[in-house]
Structure formats: structure tokens, C-alpha cells
Image 1 (cartoon, rainbow, N blue to C red):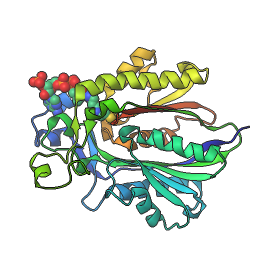
Image 2: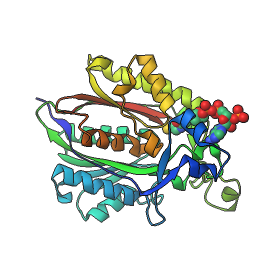
Image 3: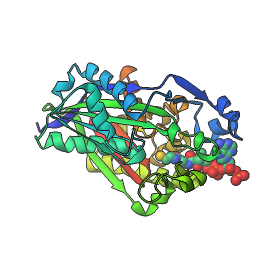
Image 4: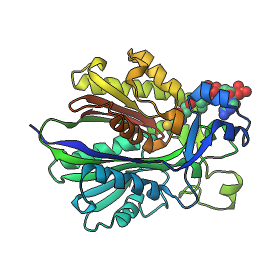
Length: 327
Ligand code: COA
């Protein structure tokens, strides 16, 4: 059997503070009914003042390591997928490494917005398949509450904070990541982005005055592209492995909007029961959404040994992708 990267531990962390749609009614001109009807979201989690992305990531990582039954010293590398790092640099992965107290391994962040976790496990998979490394920690973590404009009803109702983590390890029994499929289209970069705070529009008075430190989104257009790209990513993963949707026990999509997932299901003729959904409780947690949903599916016994599961995401960049896993 060829070497594959198997998920040997999963973890997740969600801040305790809950922000409901009713709470949002007091902040912006919106309603519980509108948000639920257009997105499927009821509530989301918000990081405490003391928490930043690496804290959420660290907590999810600790649980994944415990589940895997390994110590931080057994890791060869740490990858964090995030677009809301604690600081522009160092990477949040290095901060997690410090909290875990491991030296002599490498750690870095991946920036692919809501597709970040798929990108990160794809990269990790290459290290493991090539035989260069044996065990890696991959985390998806984002704190969008710090970068959404809480006066903009078009975006603030959609996002939440959280982190999910997996430990990947070389395995020779046919289980693990079968294939990953990554795509991006930089011409659509302005569908979803944060203009300020980088080298183009550095932090300063002008940035703050124009509220450029916050997420900007072309919601309607993003919706359409999301349906197309997620469908394409699922189709490619199935086709390249000679499978049909009937072979997949559980689809774990990026949790952006229930209507996007419903549209993908309709297009590909996949019943909704086969999609893992938790966005009603957490909203869109960006790179964390897939590993949190995976964690819940595992904990709730929805996936058994040898089942095929298919992860699929889209996000800013634009980026999209899928990962077929034999559990
Ligand atoms: N509460 C009440 N009304 C709102 C609102 C809110 N929170 N947000 C927008 N509206 C209003 C709009 O202003 C618009 O009003 P108008 O017709 O008077 O101009 C109306 O609702 C319809 O807006 P529209 O954008 O057509 O709604 P929609 O059904 O497309 O839903 C999104 C909007 C953002 C929920 C949807 O487009 C979406 O989910 N897009 C994808 C976003 C996404 O997934 N981003 C993350 C990618 S990883």
C-alpha cells in the first residue's frame, strides 16, 4: 500500500460567547427572520477580548493531539490556515508552536481564506506522501469578529470565530487523504477582501476613516461563484477517483450559507442529509469551518472506519478546492 496521510486526531475550539441573530437586531438594521431565511445562521461565537487566533488554534490543537494520543514532541511540522493572524508576522503557527513548547520543527501559516484548511491539508499531505515527514498538525483558525464591520449588515451577520485541528500521520493501510484538488482565480480577488492594514494601504488615519480595515464583500456575485466552484470541486474529486456521490458517506462543505450548500446539493443531486451542517450554530468561521464540522461528525459517530468523506470549500482569493478522505 502507498503511504497516505491519515487523520489520527481531531480537535475543535469555540469561544464561549454566543451572539444570536436577536442580539444583532440591536446592532444593525436586520432581523432574525432575514438572517435565518437568507443564510440558515441562528447564532455565532465571538472570541473574548483576551483571545486571538493563535489561542483558538492552540486549544483546538491540544484536543487533536490528545485524541491522536501523541505529544507535541512527536510532531514534524505545524501549519495554520488563517487570514486573521494575531499579527502580520510572526505566523500564528509559530505562536502555536511556542504554546506547545516544541522546538526544532517548522511552522508556517497558509492564506487561502475559507479554503485555507483544504489548502493546508493538501500541503501537509505532500510532505507526508513524499516520505520527508511523518506527523503534522494542521489547524484552521479565524477570528472574523475582529475584521468585520459591525455597522455593515451585509457582512457582520455572516461570520463567527473558531478553530479546528487535525493530526495527520503516515499510514500504510490504504486509509487517509486519497486526493486533494486546489484551484484559485486571482481575477476575482475583489469579491471578498480586506483592503487596509497591509502594504498597499498601511494602517493610518485614512484607513480608519474609510473603514478599510474591515471585510468588503460582493455578496451576490460571491454566492453564484461559490455554488459553481464547490460543485466543480466535488465533481473533480469524484471523477479523478472513479467514484460517484453515492460512494461518499458524508460531504463536509465550508459552512458559509445553507442556501449555497442546498444549491450545490440540487445541482449534483446529493440529498441534504449527506451534507454535514453546523452553520446554524457557528456561522461562517472561515478556515475553521471544515475542521470544526469534521470534529463534530467524528464525535457524533457519523463517520466509520473506511468510509469515504469529501471536504469542499471556497473563499477569498478566490480560492476553492476539495479533499477526498478514506476514514
Ligand atoms: N438584514 C436585512 N437585510 C439585509 C441584510 C441583513 N443582514 N443584508 C442585506 N440585506 C438586504 C440588502 O440590502 C438588500 O436590500 P435591497 O434590496 O433594499 O438593496 C436585500 O437584503 C437583498 O440583498 P441580497 O444581497 O440580494 O441578498 P441575498 O439573498 O443575496 O443574501 C447574502 C445576501 C450575503 C446572504 C448572500 O448573497 C450570500 O450569502 N453570499 C455569499 C457570501 C459568502 O458566502 N461569503 C463568504 C464566502 S467564504
